[in-house]
View 1 (cartoon, rainbow, N blue to C red):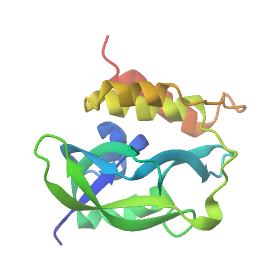
View 2: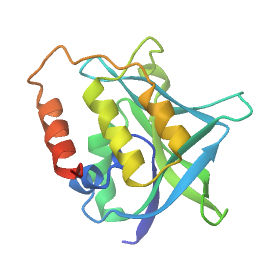
View 3: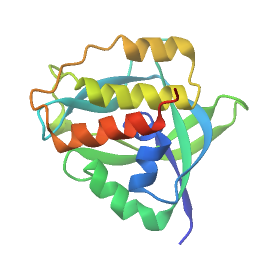
Length: 176
């Protein structure tokens, strides 16, 4: 079927999380998307804000992420996990590989217009997944600090399955 290049900028930056969704996923590079900003305005079924990207007028706006190569046979399952067609759209974008300066075209997900609510914030456990992925792939320290400064809410449902799954994954991947 072939391979495709995927730009992960949210919780899928954490390799273990993405591989649960796309077993063939293999990180290939850290990349940046210039002229875009990361926001948490995508309305989730759980009432929180999930990560998305949006074009920005800010001169130095940059979103960092991880390029993954994955088998196209994994795309359908990844689409389901990401809510493609019901909250997220799929799109091709050009990103720059940090180490080489090479521009590559990659597929990514961004919030559908009708799923955007700028008043939202992420849950703390979700934001921790993103920060863990950023650290795992050595994204720039200033960007990791920016992520750590994002306002996050405590999940009002302490036993939410997605929260349990995220915390178990974080425990597994965090080094002592």
